Amino acid sequence: SQKIEQNSEALNIQEGKTATLTCNYTNYSPAYLQWYRQDPGRGPVFLLLIRENEKEKRKERLKVTFDTTLKQSLFHITASQPADSATYLCSFAGNNRKLIWGLGTSLAVNP
Amino acid sequence: DTEVTQTPKHLVMGMTNKKSLKCEQHMGHRAMYWYKQKAKKPPELMFVYSYEKLSINESVPSRFSPECPNSSLLNLHLHALQPEDSALYLCASSQDPGLVGNEQFFGPGTRLTVL
Image 1 (spheres, chains in turn blue, purple):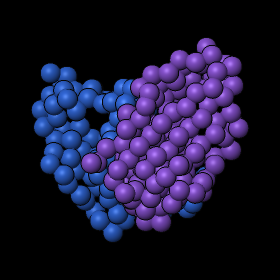
Image 2 (cartoon, each protein chain N blue to C red; image 1 turned 45 degrees about the vertical axis):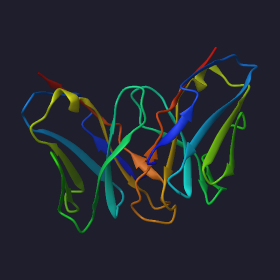
Image 3 (tube, rainbow over the protein chains, first blue to last red; image 1 turned 60 degrees about the horizontal axis):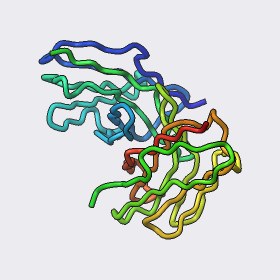
Image 4 (cartoon, rainbow over the protein chains, first blue to last red; image 1 turned 90 degrees about the vertical axis):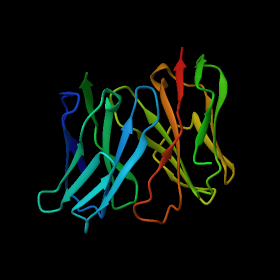
């Protein structure tokens, strides 16, 4: 079945450093991947979408890459801030157009 | 207006109660979704409405009954729920259900507790 795997362990980094989160997928070749941010008790917030023909996409301090050979997307937050602490979810639309979600990676940025 | 609103924010109900969750968007989106989310899990799709018609029901028990009165509103009617139905219920919308890659806009959710 189509599946997404994200770092299951929480990621702790120091303020100012770059956070790198990983999303690996199997049994499918999605046309695009989406990244969302979710704060506790709140709905996910869309951050970035990257298509299969795009190697890299940037938005302010965020950068996403998409490697269709490795079946992997990397999500980078540069110059991280404590306000970036949240859970980050990777998703793609499966062959029935329903979003398939990873479990998310919890990021904690320490001041 | 780029917001999805949900009411109420919190809901506590007994197993014999009937209640409803409400969701509203004014972005002109033609797809609307109900998700259920348990702690430390990703959102789990329940229903999809496409152009105000139910297009996907993920084998959700009949104690959950969705309704889409118009293109801006989505309701979820609850009846005879079980304690294991306690979760965060999220509403989302997207521009066009047929578009590949269209992002979903989520509401803040309703925290439901079933006693």
